[in-house]
Amino acid sequence: MIDKNESLKLDNQLCFPLYTASRLITQAYQPMLKELDITYPQYLVLLVLWEKDEINLSTIAEKLQLKSNTLTPLLKRLEKRGLLERKRSAVDERNIVITLTQEGKKLKDKACEIPSLLANKVPLSAEETNQFYQLLNKLIEGIE
Image 1 (spheres, rainbow, N blue to C red):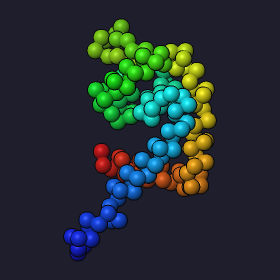
Image 2: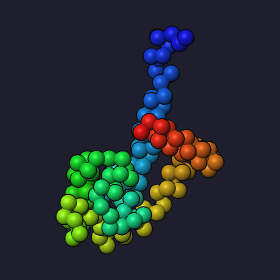
Image 3: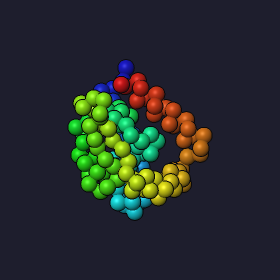
Image 4: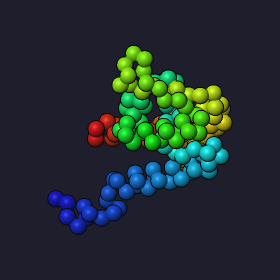
């Protein structure tokens, strides 16, 4: 039986190293994203669109595991910057289709180095990174 006091020690919490790692990784992105004049959440949206352009808001929300009301302000800021366009679907007006502009597509070329620059900052081998990625996805799927 685990002592109640032991279970509440910070060192025994899975959430704390996950939170700290997430915060540090996000901080590591900051200088690179500052050069592109985008935030980390905006970068995530752009990653989805660089992978597949012209998709529904709901698809982006699903991929990023965010609610559309969280995404809408992000998308509006990216639209204001001229990186994407939001339009109602011609097929179903309830759907909003998000499309990259030429400027948004050009930004992809500038962002191409970011993954390798970040990988150089992570003290894990390629194999360890892959294992960690798989474990994180297993954790996420198990909690969902």
